[in-house]
Length: 330
Image 1 (cartoon, helix red, strand yellow):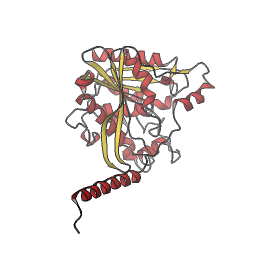
Image 2 (tube, one colour):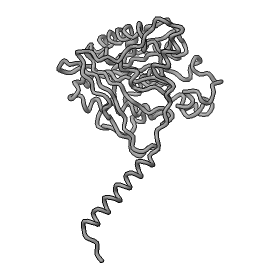
Image 3 (spheres, one colour):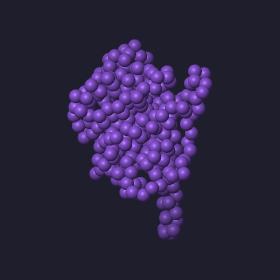
Image 4 (cartoon, rainbow, N blue to C red):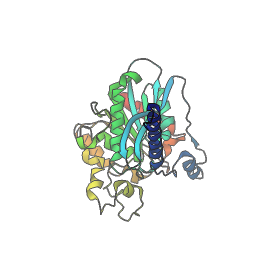
């Protein structure tokens, strides 16, 4: 007996729904390290700096926000299709504005884009479009996945420049700690095809015009950074996929100093009182001076690595960034 057409249609959609449910249930959850966040970091630092308070997520009156905007979707990863997001803070004034994409820290393994929001809001109130970017951490994807993510986000910014009032010719990248290392690598590999990745607005440029490195290493192979007695679960070893002995070519490839050249953009360094986070910086500055490329350095003498997250230092860091961008963009 032949089944009625509506029964066949019902069975088709029922089987389709079951397949979708099975696909969702089979999707592997992305592993996350939640050990680094503002609460845990504040508790750790409070006993040494009892006067500090975390900078707050507070939207200024002259700023609009768009949070968790998808800037690209990664297809067929080990964890299924994967959306990557960003938060955008824009001045309410009309016209084109210089823009800053901001990369969070956390040892390439932990942290999230919310850590950049207080500074992003303050800078947006001064006339910048600021973009806090999500990227793949080491438990999900090894180097150079994060570099591809960030460059994709920059291309997304250019593709959506008119919508968000972004000046395509004035885009800077900043980063804190591991984010500073990433910002340096993204900025100093302008025009390097094998650092672009193969997804997300490939018709747009990922070039940036200025770099802000907040306590991020520029040379993994410098003596202060290259501690050969590290444990196998050290953040850099995990992210780079092996120790220096095992992957020397990757340690060099991820060191931004080796990508610097006479066409590199200006750089602002904001340093803590811990010299190991500035490994290779003096050598790079010497190279930049030789090429007559502007660099600027400011040191926060306190022995607190994450100074940018806390008052009284957040506003000081914002002032340095603002003044630097005024110099290089005007």
